[in-house]
Structure formats: structure tokens, C-alpha cells
Length: 348
Figure 1 (cartoon, rainbow, N blue to C red):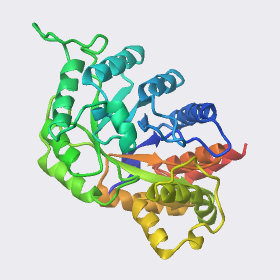
Figure 2 (figure 1 turned 90 degrees about the vertical axis):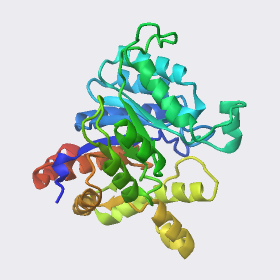
Figure 3 (figure 1 turned 135 degrees about the vertical axis):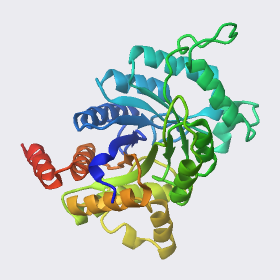
Figure 4 (figure 1 turned 45 degrees about the horizontal axis):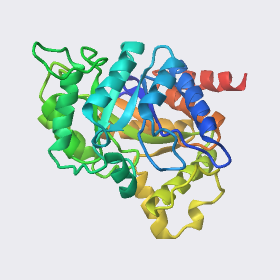
């Protein structure tokens, strides 16, 4: 059995704009959340690139990474991810090279190949570029060259960027990036926080075909986990209704800002809607301390993940911090003592 205390804990923040709140509020909450994550010993804090979405404030991902890194001290901060087809590799290398010079040893570059937006906005971002399947592997290779040491005669040099060796992670929700990460010997993160269907198959492909590289001697996999922890299962289920509403809005194409929780929301839906939300959140862990601990253990046993990256969409920012604390406590070696300590600290 995989031991939870051997798994690293990190967080992906979509920087949700809450109903009744502003983008400035969302950015302030993100920084406070990152500082709390660091105080809990989280390994890394990633931010996701999305565009043309009123409920998400992380579109200028590299700018926000700099803000979060500047407001923390030791935790790694990075992209989960930069959607590489939207950008020229040179621009990405210069941006993350600059971040690496400002915050040495703390910056991650997670790369995805989805647009992170709707078709209309995708065209606005990419202008007249038509993407092919060969583009992403080629662009990843170019980024590796640009962030590595400059070689004699190299005509294109990222400055800043060259020699920073910013760690590159490949992100995905299908088998494509799993195969590419294995071939290149790169660390891999699966987006099971919203697309869990191929999770186990992708991890198997990655681990089976992994080739050691100068970057990584053996496979290293992050698994995305939607997580909402509270003092009781009932409270957690109530708080999770904000996430359920957000997921339903995604599935119906009616995205908006993060809504407050609603009592009995799932019971008010049709069976087909409940099933669709359940499929979307198949890896989710929602409940009180005991349920969260057991849920995380089940994910650990199924995936043998090296790291969990939680996504915690709670409307109340303070309750989100509590959820993170409870998650960290659940993964501590002495869980009972850690839970007691955490709850005592929150009531002082």
C-alpha cells in the first residue's frame, strides 16, 4: 500500500473570480492562498492559463507566477500550464527565464497543448497559425534548447533564459503527452481534476515507456485531485455545491463566476446531470477528515502517484484555507496528531 506521507502535496489555482467579487479580489486571495500553502509545506503552487472566461483571472500566467513567487519564499511556483500552441517558444523561454533569474530554483514550466479557451479566442491568440500534431513535440524540444546552456554557433538565444534550465513538465488529459513525456524523460502531470477517464491508462503508458534522461532518472507523476475538506462530511458536501455548479456550467457551456454553495443542489438536478458531474469529478475527494484521508489513500493506491496536486474551489476563501490544512493533516505521518494540531491552530 502506498503511504500518504511519502506523496508530495501541491496545489493548482484557477484563480476563481467569485460572484460579487472582483478580479483584484481573486488575485489577492490567490496570494494569500499560496502563502498558506507554503506554511503547510506544499511542494509547489501552479497557475493555469485560461482566456476569455469571466470566472478565471489567471490568463496572464507568467505575470501572476511572478506575483505569487514574490509573495512567497521557498515554495516552487509555476504554470499548470502554459498552453504552448498559444505562444512562440522564444517568448515563453524569455518569460520563464526572467522568472528563474528573479526566483532561482523555484520556477516550474508546465506545458499543455490545449487552447485553454473557446475557438473564437483561440483564433485571436494564434492569429493565422494552423496547428499540426507535430508542432507540440517540436516546440517542447525548442524550449528545452532555449532554456539549456547556449552552444557555440547557436543563432537563437533566449536572454534571459539560456542556461536557466527551468524544469519542464508535460501536462495532459490524454495519452499523447504521456507518451511524449516518457520519450523525452520528463516529469508528467495528468489533469484528472477535470478529465479523469484516461488517468490510469496514461500513467501506465508514461511509466512503461519512460526513458531516463539528463533531466529525470525515473518516472515522476503528478495526479490532479479535486479536494474539498471540512469538519464533517455533510459540511464538505454543502461547500462542494459551488464546485458542482461550476462543473455544470462548464458542461453546459454557460461559464460564469464561482457561485456560493446551495443546499441540496445535486438533489435538484436530473439524474443525467448528476452523472455527468460525477464523471467529471471521478477522482474528487470530498468530506470530513476521516473521509478525506480514506479518499486520498484510495487515489494513492490506484495511481501510485509521486505527488497530488489539489484543486479546491470553495466560495469562502477562509474555508478554502481550512480545507488545505485538513488535506495536509490527512497526509501527515501521524494523521490523528496532525488533525488535532490543525484544528487547534484554526480555533486559536
